[in-house]
Image 1 (tube, rainbow, N blue to C red):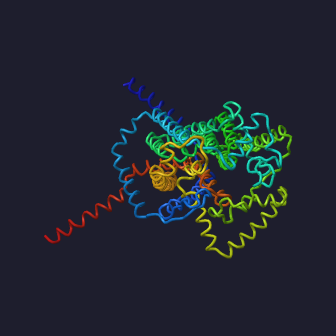
Image 2: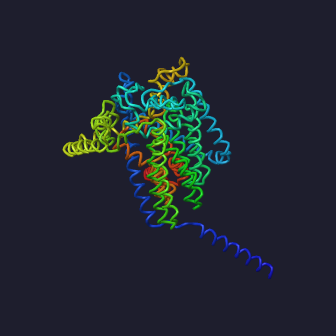
Image 3: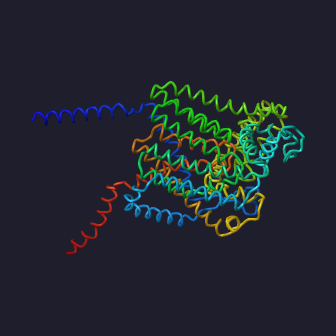
Length: 563
C-alpha cells in the first residue's frame, strides 16, 4: 500500500510538473493582438471573398488581336460549368476523406523532396524549350549588368544610345528607375560567374528559387498548423500551381524576390513562436536580398513591422521593435548603398527617380491595357518636370485631386474602374506566365512543348486549368480566413502571410497594376487554404445531418399517415 501511494504521489507530481510546464509554455493572446489580427482578417476576408465570387462570374484574358500590347478583355464566365466543377471537386474531396489515414502515413520529407524535384524538372524543361530573350525593362537590366560585368558603364550616361533610349528622351534609364539597380547588382554577379552571352543562368536560378519558395510555403504550413494532413494538402496544392514555374523565363527579380521573402517570413514566424532573437538575422538578410531583387517586396517589410510592433506589445519583447527599426534601415540603406556604388563606378550622379506619388497618379487612371495598368503617366510627370521629383510630385498631386473629384462625381464609373482593375489583376489566372515569354524572341526554334503552349492544345488546357484552380484556391483561402477566426487561431503568426496579401491587394488597387505583379503572391494563400480543406474534411456537420434526417423522415410520415 505504501509503495502504491508513493507511486501515485510520484505520478501526480510528474503530472503537476508537466501541467505547470505546459501552462507556462502557452502564451496568452493579448487583447491588442486579438483585436488587431481579427480586424486585419476581416479586411482580408472581404477582399478575397469578393475575388472568389468574381472568379465565378467574370474573368479577364488577353485580346488575341492586341496580344503583344497586353490589352485585357473581360468576359462572362460559364457560371454553370464553374458550379459543376466546384461541386465535383467537393465530392472528390469528401471521397478522399476515407483515405486520409493512408495519406497521413506518407513520409512528408520525401513528399517535399519530390515536390522540389517536380518543380525543378518542369521548370528546366520549360525554360530550355522556349529559350526566351529579354525585352523592355528586363533587357535594360541585362544590358547594364552584362556591360558592368565587363567594366563598361556607358548605359548610365544620358544620350549614350542605350537600349530603347529614344523612349526615355535620351535620359539614362536609371534616372527614372534607380531602384532597378538592386536587380542589376544581383544579375551582374551571375554574369561575372557564368558569362554574359545569354540569360539562361538567371532563368535556371529562377527555377531553383521557385522550388525553394514552394518548400518554404510547405514548411511555413508545418510551423503554423503542426498537423500532417494540412501539410500534405499544401504540398498537393503547391504541386498544382504552375504559374510561377512558367514565369521562370522572365529575367527579372520577381521570382528571386518571392523566394527570399517567403523564407524571411518563415524565420520571422519561427521567431514569434520561440522568441529566439538569433532567428531575426537570417530574416533580415533574406528580406534585404528580396527587396534588392524586387523593390515591391517592401510590402513584406510593412507587414513584418506591423506584426513586430504587435509582438512587442504582446510579449514585452523590446528586441522586436528594435529589429523593426533595424530592418527598415537595412532594407532602405542597402538599396541606397547599391545605387551609390554604381554612381561611383560609373562616375554619373543619378536622379531620385519616379516617386510613389507619380505611380499613384498612374494607378488611378485609365490605360489602353486595363484600368490602372501602365499608361506612361508617371514617366510623363517626371520627364515633363525635367527629372525634378518635387515638381513632378506637385503635378502628380494636382492630377490625383482632379481624378478624385471626377470619381466623386461619377461613382458608378469609379466602382466599374476599380472592379475591372481587380479582375484584370487577380482573375487573369495565367498571371502573364505564358504571355511573358510568348511575346519575346527566342534563341532556339521552339520545340513541341513551346509550340503547344503558345498556340496549341497544351496552352488551351492550362488556361482552363488555371481558371478552375484559382477559383478553388480563392474560395478555400477566404473560407480558411473564416475558419481561423471561428477556431480562434488568428494570431500574428497565422495572419502574417494574409497581411502580406492584403498589402499586395491594397497597393496594386491604388498604384500601378498588372496581373504579373500578383503572381508572386498567389502561393501565399496555400497554407490558409490547406487549413480550410482540413477543417471541411473533419467537420461534423451535425446540423446538416439533422436537417437531412428530417427530410428523410417526411416520406416515412406520409406512408404512416396513409396506412
